[in-house]
Length: 454
Image (cartoon, rainbow, N blue to C red; front, side, top):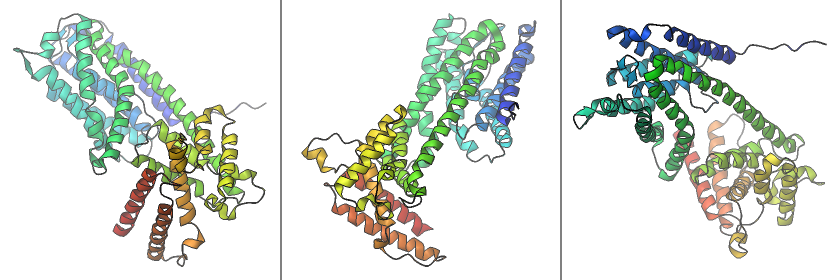
């Protein structure tokens, strides 16, 4: 029996090194006599400790920026620096300019190092760290530079009980952190405003879920420093590093889940029942339409999976539909295909919501009005996206230009999309939801404008 061979992944090496650095820094800071230092020695030690911790945390975050959404160590360390008030030897005199400088150096150096480790390019690095720099600087200015009845807020909190400091600092960081989502999406600030607002609100929900962990940990580090000193920073951040590894494993499972759904969606295509790429195109178009209608987060993921699997019921057909275009099938056949696909998908309990969306995808929209049928929005979106792709890729919508003629291909596709949209408008209010069709028209218009610009 041969033992399995394991490869040590770069991320594992990175995690081990980072945790080792944090533990080593903890041991160094716990050495006796460090808290008796004064002047530039203690001041430099404070700045160096936070700069190293921010850099290490940002290396981990930049290395996993592609797939991971979690409370990162670099952001938490930057927040803790901005909230630092007391040390065992007395108040920590750190200016807002020093907070900004240390945070910027740590985020930039850590981001560049993490990008180099994963052999990538620092695309969007500065745009990604700018919101954090703004919020950290704003918190530091409110805490240190604004005069509150003749004294700064940090001066008033210094020496107060720990619970008083924790409540005030948590309220401060909670209010300021909600400024980050709009700052992160300033580059996409353009009409339609509803889509931009939906994106910001989704980011706000993520900020509340993940940012609250960073905020609470940063406040805990700030309050604990009066008893533990700077050792509180690496000691209390070690659990976040362990949590980061656990979240990464969970994200890998979700990625494998997505790949399994994508592979399952290819069954009708590999058996010749459906045109190549049909499921992927319908899923992409459904997400674009859903984005216009404010579908985001978990609902968007469910919509994508249901769109990928919407034609799975065709494997039960004895006589295939020409080119797999369900639009050409009779209404009863469309509903039967949707029901069969839903029964297959419903065999797994984790896809129960997707099975419901697939089952209702063939129901005409007028049933919502005439029979008060509760038709899911995802089903209405997939119905429109599937019909559009069936019409665009149908040979009846126009001849294809010769191979190699890119300009002719783009022009012909634009004409087919316009003709398909006109066909769909004929069923407006009866077969298709008017809101969904309007969103489709906006997506098609954006495509045409982009093609013209190119």
